[in-house]
Amino acid sequence: MTSMSEGAVLHLKGRVLVGPDDVRDELWVVGGRVTYDRPAMARDATTVTGWVLPGLVDAHCHVGLDAHGPVDAPTSEKQALTDRDAGTLLIRDCGSPSDTRWVDDRADLPRIIRAGRHIARTKRYIRNYAHEVEPEDLVAYVAQEARRGDGWVKLVGDWIDRSTGDLGACWPPGAVEAAIAEAHRLGARVTAHCFAEESLAPLVEAGIDCVEHATGLTEDTIPLFAERGVAIVPTLVNIATFPRLADGGAQKFPRWADHLRRLHARRYDTVRAAYDAGVPVYAGTDAGGSLAHGLIAGEAAELTRAGLPATAALSATTWGARDWLGRPGLTEGAPADLVVYGSDPREDVRVLAAPRRVVLRGQVVG
Image (cartoon, rainbow, N blue to C red; front, side, top):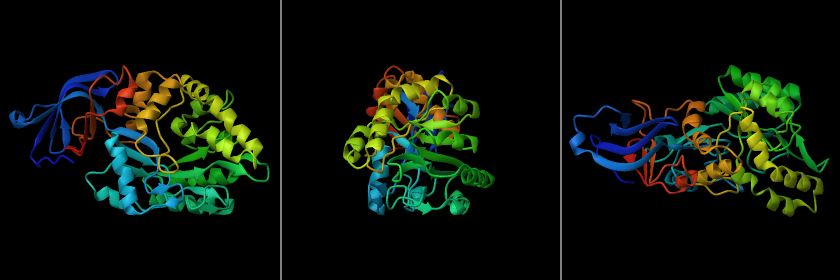
């Protein structure tokens, strides 16, 4: 971390991408905040040149979690630092059994918006990850996690059903409708892990705000998502693992394995069709389970492979994502969380993989 004194001024010069069509020549960081007014101390400023973006957003990430369950604080710290050094300065933590509130006291770590701990059906999710409950207890657990989180609750909407050997919805419509209503009453939005087709329409009709992965979207459900304004976070870098998962489970669950392969084969078409229909799409990596942290540039590139324009893929991890999560970008007076690149990321989102400088809370940290 490159420390700057409390009164130091930072001058960002080049092309400041305040928005996709709002490009300015410079900004200043004074007292850890963005300003476009030249300060009196400008002569003593440290100047950084390049293409400037708001700090990147990973809208589906898990700090404090690995493939086996909760991890200790040093491991969580390493995860957060890896994301930070990749330019991710805002994380929507989409379910974690670990208490990571201590991160909020660290000026050198990304900001986290928590969804509490996953809420799953009994024996229908990864061991050690979630509260595992039955439908009659769903409302109570949603209320609990709504109070613990930062405005989000995470459900597991579908998972493998051993009685059928395939993916299946986890909750009856009445239970999930009551649970989402309770979360909304408490001021929290609700998202759900969903791979399959059958779980989607009931969740949307119950009032859900977002769906993670959403590989099961079809021409029948995409219009429903668009009409209701339900966002998706496709996590394409995670969906890339489906063939490997299918190969590993094919002998025991051949229907499930075949289903995963089909969902994987049409993943790009699914995301592009959703985007074309007006469904809000945001970038998330699903880091922290079996995936490494620091993959947000790869997810942005995957969105462009799915057919999103480069500016839309950028917005999914910058301007649009921050607005969706209620966090400022490079607006006057906002906290100075930004990343500097050597060339225009609107021309090639792969530029995101090589940040020139990372500035967090007004301090150059990378």
